[in-house]
Image 1 (cartoon, rainbow, N blue to C red):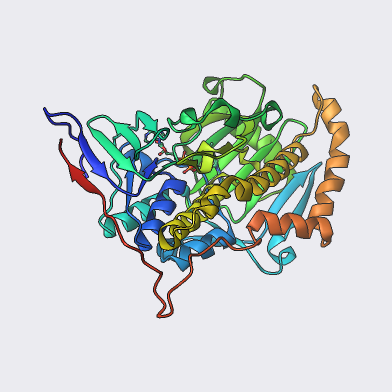
Image 2: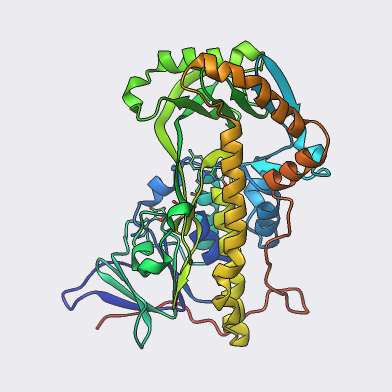
Amino acid sequence: MSGTSTAAGPRRLRTQVAVVGAGPAGLVLANVLLRAGVGVAVVERRSRAEVERRARAGLVEHRVVEYLRAHGLADRLLAEGTRHGWCDFLCAGRLLRFDYGAQSGGIRHWVYPQQLLVRDLIADLGTAGHTPEFGLPATRVHVDGAGPARVECPGLDIECDYVVGCDGPHGITPQALPPDTAPRAELDERYPYDWLTLLAEVDRGVPGVVYAVHEDGFAGVMPRTSRIARLYLEIPAGDATARWTAARVHERLRTRLVGAGAAVPRLGRIMETGVLRMRSSVRQRFQHGRLFLAGDAAHVLTPSGAKGMNLAVADAADLADALIRRYRDGDETHLAGYTARRLPEVLRTRDLAAGFLDLLHPQGEHPADRRGELARRLERLRELAEPGAAGAAFAHWYVGAGPGLPVPRRAPHGTPHTMQSREPRESTP
Ligand code: RFL
């Protein structure tokens, strides 16, 4: 597929499903649809190099890994990722080890950086002959009226049966939904916490996630690779990144982490710094006619539960199943029920992530007030870390031990059902 315009106007392409955005949601959806014989075209506004180095998530749920494995999309993740089953809580000078792998009955999640998963999924699409079109932003989406749906890009018009918006909250597709799908006020929440987020080289691998609940503010250390970790530091509301020099970051991390005795790695080069202003936002509906939203385009959560990427893949899995049923059986009821199936899980995840976020931040304007609250936080963290109902429930949620994601039915001979494939077809008017 090429996005070059001609003197005669934009080139046209006809396919079954147009996917806007090559993040985890769009790439999983495209791979699964193609494997089932559904025609797909993916457009992505960033370059391939940019997409493949966009470091964000790192914890991949058990059910997501199983889903990717079932589709032959997890080979490198399984070979190079690591399974994780515990984290440390630091609070009031105490270290509590939470063995959530044991509390979930032996199920663990995986550490594998998002940009590596994205790289693998792009390579898988390439092997199938469907490399996304990079550097090509969708500029308009038409889903109303008779005739095929359309995605407009500079120099290219895609005609399709369905458009799936996987372009994040600031993409073009959320804007194409009517106002009554926008998040209600109570589902569009700004939490009173700002985190500095850093990607840094470390002198040794981080063996498990560390959550430090400290009167000076929250700090977190997340494993990524043997030489790289993601770090979070709560900072005063509205504080700018520029005020956080490497020296100040090191000093704050030492105060919040080392004091409680956790084995914290020595930081080397800081590769990336940003500020996350904690918020969550969930749309009322994730669909309108022939347009469906998946992942961050439909809902943004705080990173406290490490669920954004996992939900994005879960949305993609649900939509892939519904679209495959539509093309295989001509049955549109599953597509119609997409929001009704996905919204409850998204809302539950939002609430659990927000509750966990609150737990990590003792309230109070001054360190002395927050110090007074640490004993209560320690009690609640202990409830989680010690074997019991609260810990088991959290553990199951955290590792993604719930019901598996829908894997399309297989034909009797063991290969996925295929349906009449309509490969992208290009024409120049
Ligand atoms: P993405 O990954 O943002 O991909 C959207 C893609 O759409 C493209 N795009 C367009 N393409 C064409 N035309 C247009 N008009 C377009 N507009 C945008 C963009 O360039 C982009 O490539 O969305 P997706 O696929 O929904 O995936 C969501 C996840 O990326 C996100 O939820 C997670 O990264 C959240 N998150 C975490 N999730 C986890 O499950 N586990 C974690 O441990 C975790 N840690 C994190 C995180 C997010 C973070 N940040 C930076 C917000 C840690 C951090 C620091």
